[in-house]
Image 1 (tube, one colour):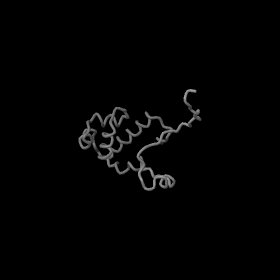
Image 2: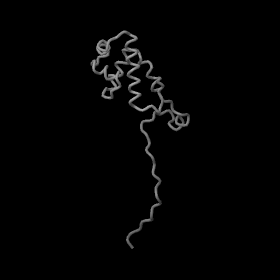
Image 3: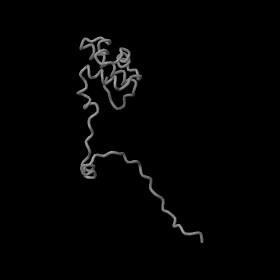
Image 4: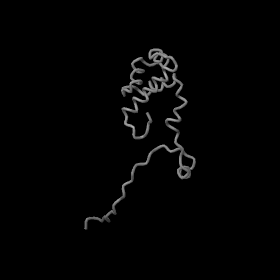
Length: 115
């Protein structure tokens, strides 16, 4: 299956689960032995491999670590590089907050004491 940004969540989870299962079988590991090495329950491994959404990200990462996929996380979610303009604006500082959308202000009426 080719994964794309248009793939819905359920087929995506099932495909990731199938790939984890194939990697586990290629390493000749049972679900129980993988769970033991990863420090998760066998049921967590079962859920990951079937694409159930009730698993925690930490369990997924532990399984990926045992299967040797942690070094590929950078490929999955690359570290974003700031644009040259952003670097100029920040002047070497790290950005800490996101800016919200700004609402254009309506012209204010001049205020005067109740005459």
